[in-house]
Length: 374
Image (tube, rainbow, N blue to C red; front, side, top):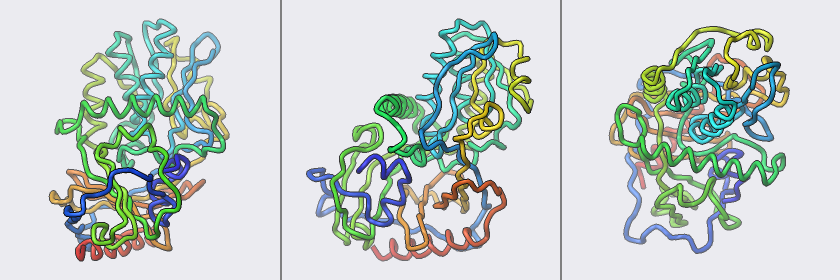
């Protein structure tokens, strides 16, 4: 797959045929027809509908250290729709930048997945770490993440250079390897699933990569036989990691506090308020908050809406596809079935859109009928 297609939005390419097949990659075995248990998408099974704002920068995330008066300020924000995905890699890099200042104590701003992960790494290295945050889980943006391990809505390739792409690859690989060690531990809510990208049209060009490298997607296969793709023209499938944010973020908080970390609920209105903190090293993991707090005008929200259904333990796969109205994706969690597919740039309204909810339910119901006939 062309990197720019997948990183812009994994589902868009799968839905409309722009996600091409890599020539020579292994094909699905001819005698191993795919079988899918359809998702039960009846409206009475809806648990809730939630909205979150992805902190997107067209030139990608910010990982750097700079002087901030007499302090060292480390930035770790702007991960778009890939915050959970990139958390261990980017937070390790941010912790390295903070550790280079040899701090006895560190302030971390934000208690989403980046703040908690960065704080945990630093606390395990022996620093005295305080996380300052306006909101704690389960009330953070990270709690509203879809959280399939797959970098999406992360950057625009035309806006980045080879140095950034190298950093992205390094941090993506580090992050995925770290999540592997947490897989199938019920305390963390991380587990492997089989994920499918269904295309309605035949691919036009060969895959040349997957984000971070093909080896991060075990069992990568593709087929254009409709008998094994629920009637779609083409499918690419692979194993990747599903992370349940509600379980995972609670585990991160427990680990952080067990390592000696401290959580303080505090909102900072200005950077001068941050400057008055006693810690000499500050790590900024505020996501969209960095726009106002530190003047990053490139940051923009990308609104995403999810509808959660009652869980179906028999659903052990995920998919992304679409129709003329947009992208549709489904991820299974232990606690729910996640239906999504919205991507509204510069929209800030956190009120669920009934029309989008209707689109999700009707669109995924159509896919369920298709899968039932496969």
